[in-house]
Image (cartoon, rainbow over all chains, first blue to last red; front, side, top):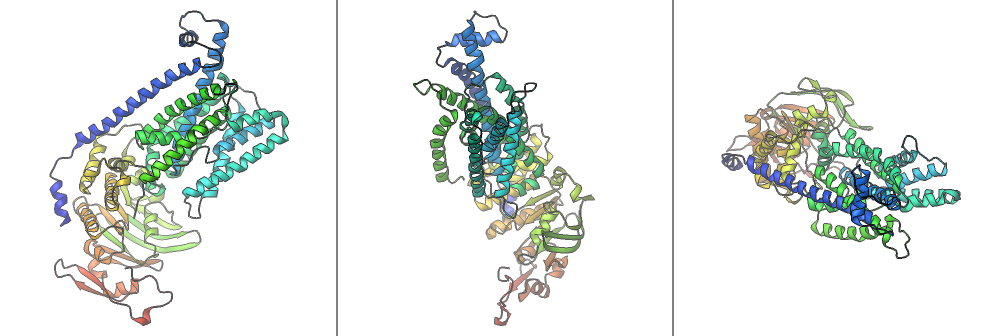
Length: 368
Length: 272
């Protein structure tokens, strides 16, 4: 009888210690990865700040940063200080924050929609945000109020609007979202919105350059003020995403089973979509549409760190920051003429082939 | 434990079940039987809070199901679906630990008690050896047992199963029902399972509820309601019920349909 084999095994004591140790090893590995990435990020910030048309040595970079933080350091001339602090470091920090925001949004979208191809870009959310910004620019709304810019708000409305349309389009009669139709709807919406942006562009010659900037994705000419624009959206978005990391794990089982396990599915889903949209909107409003970061980074991290979303979110944010910092350095220095590339071009050039590779190796292992 | 009063269920325009009234007491082992499309899953969806009733009420341990928080509901009631497809390669232990979700504090870390519950549940469903295996790489029967372990880790008083063993082979089916029988007998776990396999139901369920044509046709102790007349009426199939010489439980034998009984719009009868 089947019963006999069950009761025979029940005699052995439960291996609580073994299971606990095993989980602790996982935590230890996560902390190691966290420390390594954090250190890499700090080093990258300093290195990336030193690179550019004007040669600045690393010690000078350190002197400027520590000087600004209130330490007594060797005096640095005014021009160097402005270049390092005002132009380069702010840009490096901004690109890191945007990378973290996009990668986190990618993790949330992929986990929530159970779709490996979901990210702010493929879902049309980024383009929606860009349209929101373009509309405001056309209407001449800009500037800042108490350090807050209206542009991220326009981006947020655009992002939410695009997301609602995509979700409605891909929802079948039974309420289920089909994997293929989700991305299809995302592409349709994204293409349509891009056309609208182009229309605005041709109607309004004056804001042409400003709008092109948001379509291509670039950190050119961005500074601390933009870090300020992004931060509130970013903090709120990150808090919402991390708050629900356990629910994200459970949502991988599908909505029905999440419900059975006690997750308040509609509320959690709404909050997570809002969090991811806040992150996307904040990122797009300061840097334009940058693709592939939100798509590739979560995949990469999932292969290395496993599917648990608590770890995935933290490590993806750091990896996204790291990758976009260096992508922006490449955008600044790649062309010999001294001209800048839009950073969106760099991420697409790097991310496209990499994603192709991931897709290929994934399929052969039958995971998606 | 479960009380259902004048319950009416449906999707959109379509009415599926109406005027349902029944009670399930603690420690009962109830089989929910009926032809395809009779509304077994619909009833389970309603009992698990997925589908809001159009009318009537569902009361679980003196509380209205609709007013319970998701968390409290999941502490009392666990559900095992027919199949579960997990997209991400979580280790099986992590899947079972998800069953502790309704008992955990948001900011608290996993306690030894949670881990013990998970391990104990895996022991009961003989899935202990799968702890580290990614759930995406285990067989269908193993995955189903992991899902049952997850439901047990919820520490529920009521377990609902929606054709939970339909896709498994004979041995796996029996193993799972032995586990349910054990928990029912030792922990007083209330079990309500929708199923297709009549003889499996007769073997394990103390009470059977037959539904058809939008309502409960018969509801009673297996010995009383597992008769050729009732089975024939519910499934529109000629049946004989014999008593198994070994375990003495009733056993249904299908009889072939006579040519005259094959109608154009006959429901799917052969599957039962």
